[in-house]
Length: 633
Image (cartoon, rainbow, N blue to C red; front, side, top):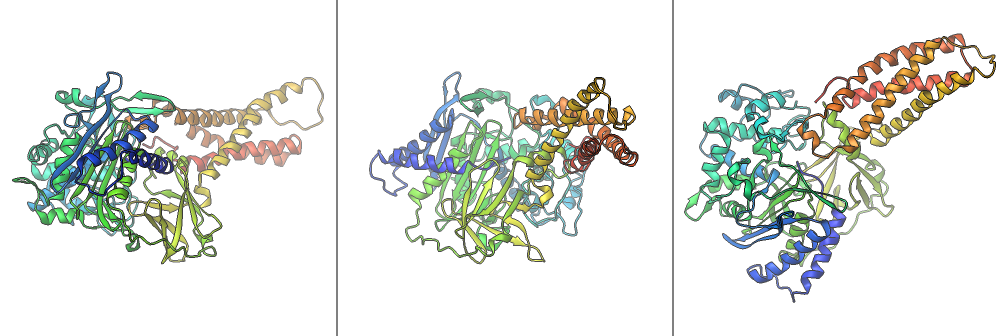
């Protein structure tokens, strides 16, 4: 869960919102002025919602234990014109659920029933989980690694949701059957994992002896007065749940409510008023009024830096929270995305300030604009120094290349999604590096010395990690790691291969029948080959053409969340073709040798046949790389 924000659009909208808010009068930096805070938020939120076609949103701001703003904007249901009620309207808070889950884990750590540094498998065995995590490295996976995405698990999104609630399996049963393998050493880098977090949630269930939803209700929601919040869908709250939407061009379409099989990682629902209580509890060291849900020592443990890719970044992970410093102020935060919803909890623990925002479109632009402009207005840094770039033009050649977020599926056909999710780094010729993602606008990073790259506009830092031979292996940020790709892993190589294979298959499938028919009209002195040479090549070229065209069209036509419900049936049928094509590739390779040995056809005819064979043979490593041999999901 979770997608990159549309950075340039967000910046434009923030600037527009600033102009809009300026009409309300001269700004002061007094956060306690509730009327001015509301006018400011109105300017930002209404502008972004209009530009991004967002039907509804909620924004909640707390400070020093008080709610400064809790306001709904737009509609919970656009068709029925149901307004957002910030007290009752429930948003799917998606991965913000992970912070509530981590709070539950820490309660049991405080009670001595769990240990953050305890081995995950030992804890699972202690509480008779019935399954174990596959440990493949000398370093063992700890409970903290499960929470902080540092266990090294493969990505797996296929089948993690159900449209029918009655078909959602029990958490333990789902994890036992669908736990992804470990593919990286623990703590080498972060690699975001819903499944890892869900295992930590399952340990809450096991260690407490209570069903997970019951535990969270009785030990977090009820004590904090979060009366409308739920871990999962319940019929009793259906009328209060905001309708989620998908924006496609000028269309705003409702999306179905799907049921997440990993509740601790992202199924929870909450309102602005309820999330205010949760933020206040964290900002006041675990206490709201006379109620304490967690000791201050354990709250501090959640908020402090527990893992960082590189000390130069100044950002990393606490216990579930992403942590860092902005304009000299320490922040903790977590965002979340689900089909139809985008949310964020963002807090300044040393300043007692927190913001929760959610909207009913899966679009992170609004939350980015709100927190970015809020910090600029109320927590600006007047002493901020201009960045003095360091000339790395001569060294930049070793950084230039293509990278991929290491949160991807290495063992299943989900890997195909990485064809559209690369990051390319290039020099702008002026000592700066341009980072361009497949689906976003470029970012400019300025080298500032000691290997640090700084994106001034977004206050984002990045560094490169080098291997033992001095070559670049990773691009690292505070919360993500990007692997450098070899030439044969890059999408442009695979797209070029697909394009060439399609042309060759079309030339054979369409051209050879025409060539065959033309021979009846004129005599030929070219030595013919037995008919089965071209018939078999024509058949297997046709299968290759069918597979590439239909698979490509299917993947492009699918909704971005459709794979979470399982593999579409048409793809299952297509996966029957690769093994047949592999057999055909071997046969055609033998036939090609015979064609050249015996001198069949003209030289051009033999060359064309060889190229068609090469395309079929080339599909074999293509299938292996993209996990298309077998039913891998």
